[in-house]
Length: 225
Image 1 (cartoon, rainbow, N blue to C red):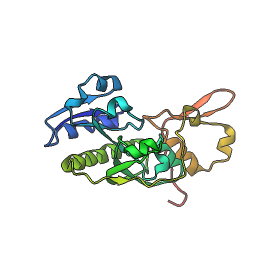
Image 2: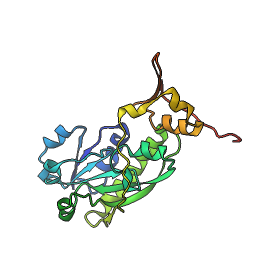
Image 3: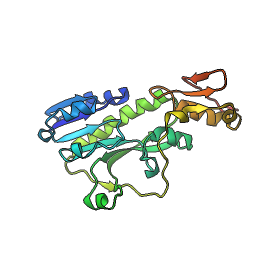
Image 4: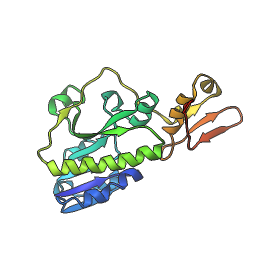
């Protein structure tokens, strides 16, 4: 098999060697940017594997090659961007990491809905600092891609259960807390807010009339423990 592997964050880049060394892979090409992918003769490859991308690839790509990715949420409400941050802020401790398809069926396209399909999945633990979560994202992505490539093209696809709830993608301004915000949050809520915005993401910060205080890393202990 000939595959293209596309990742830009370090936790995703660290998965590439595992994919490249898979027994079924004859040729693997690593790309970090969309422009690099579009420069390739996509029709000459069997698969496009993305690791850490959640945005749509566009018809210029998915019409020319089978494209899959990994998505770190069990509920469809987190399919619209920043799933790690939103799930942590919502108090979710365990979620799913899944292989998903970028290609929707024709009926779904005509209805302007997303019939999301996923194949392999594993449990993802959202506890700890962002560095701990990124280590898990790397490890579980390796498992998922290995399983997918082992089974390809006979992977079993399932429909993502639809929901009426949509959690909009967070924007940079959502990383700011005012003094009023601080007064209305308990320590566990503050811990979840700042840990989900540790590197490699833009840090959370507290702002007042004098300036901005950025919180790079946090630690938390419950009372009595």
